[in-house]
Image (cartoon, rainbow, N blue to C red; front, side, top):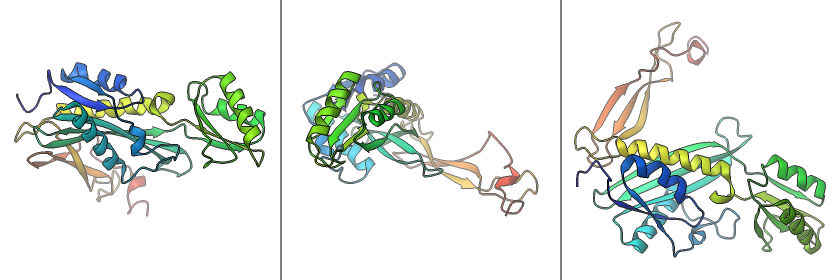
Length: 282
């Protein structure tokens, strides 16, 4: 088997939230592989977005655990896993943001390759006793395409209702939660599971495209897939004064197997805008 191809190979993918379709759509035509959907394990045991179980470790560690579990259950030597996270956007810190990660582990080649994507998220919440406010929140969050989760009283109430995906179900669940609530409030939040959140699924598909690009890039030294950018070096000259700026001038590419490194000079632009120059715009 040539080390740079996954043609005619099965790749284990453990999920219970419907991600296998978008993963297969990205990887199978380009790589010639088969995404083997693995079931038989409750991935919620590794952490839930609705906080019944917190995720131990980092996003990367959780993805590795899922990939390994899929490989164990399927008996395959290559495994793939998806893991998402939500927080504030990295630019202003004011808007919800989603980061999706796909990790491929190949025990034959002894490599790990990561694909990533990120962007704005549907990740809202509301505590209210008003049905009109609940309806307005649902509309803002893209309901019913984006499903909702409801609880009586507050965000940590154990009486949770997931996967609410129709106006009738929303009204029924809201009334039920309100009748159970000791404070006259209902907690409403966006369901962040992949099959219930089209915005997140879009980012998972983009992460799959990124992983596919990485797997099709091979190391010039050993031909192993996964060759990619691991760092950037600043110093792009200012368009006005010519002095070095913090904008990157080159990228470092590294092999995931033999660790061969190469510097590639930036080609999309040869100078930085003066507004990024510490000399022209201190």
